Image (tube, rainbow, N blue to C red):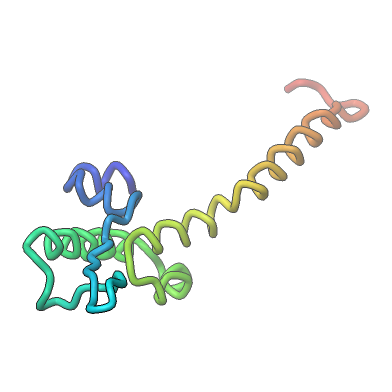
Length: 117
């Protein structure tokens, strides 16, 4: 998926990985709040357009079961992170899998009467 998106538009892949969609403005009290569409400049709109492209490319490659996992996500970054955790697991799960595989390797022996062929 990474290669496909980078081949189409490298900036879109940056949106998927970094999610630079913080289009905020200061309100009257000086607190950062999300900009409305009317308050967005051309650069902000370009970021949202690239996010939409990334979401489309990510969603088009999914089946119905996968879509149910990500249907609540609003950004390409959220979709990517959700899919990554679903398929690869968290860092702790990855470590556990590695430990399990190593212990299975250590226990691997030939059975009686078994040949290498």
